[in-house]
Amino acid sequence: MMQDTEHNREKALAGLNAYANFWGTIRREDIEHARSLIADDMLFIDPFSEIHGADGFVRMLHHMFEQCHDPRFVMQQLGLDVGGPDADGCYNGYILWEFAFEMKPGGKTTEITGMSAIRITGDGLIAAHVDHWDSGQQLLRNIPVLGFFVNQVLRMLAAEPQFRRP
Image (cartoon, rainbow, N blue to C red; front, side):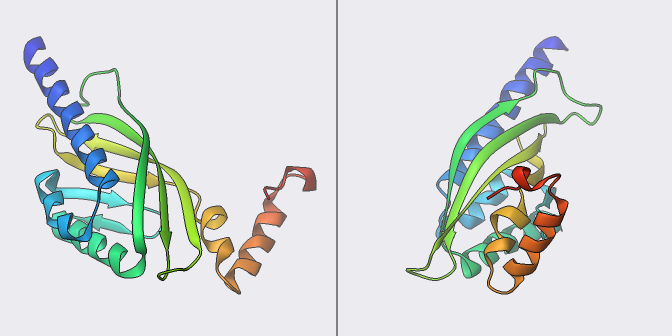
């Protein structure tokens, strides 16, 4: 059993690496390749969406390319939990990343830094991808009109004026 678990851990790490590489080299014409990396019932969560299933995930990727000009990711770090699989047989991993895009060609570049908690099956497929990033600070505060209100809320929530983020 130990050998089988170690073999599954190696497959999980290989799956995590392949998934990170997919994001790091993502192009519109490669979106369908995602299906070979994810479980059919994959769960994807980010600050704006909760998607169940591979079909929804692929639609979300198409939507990203419709909304964002030249989206690009740089994978900063990834890792797999040193413990064994959870009771459901999945391994826990993470990816630290930077995302940059323009809303329109030649527009201002938006940069977002985040972390994704990733669940990987013993077969190396991605079972869940949960993004963690600050949508208010990194995105919403830069949108005209809405940004004014987001900045007001962020100022109110700061413990003291000297602790406010720029």
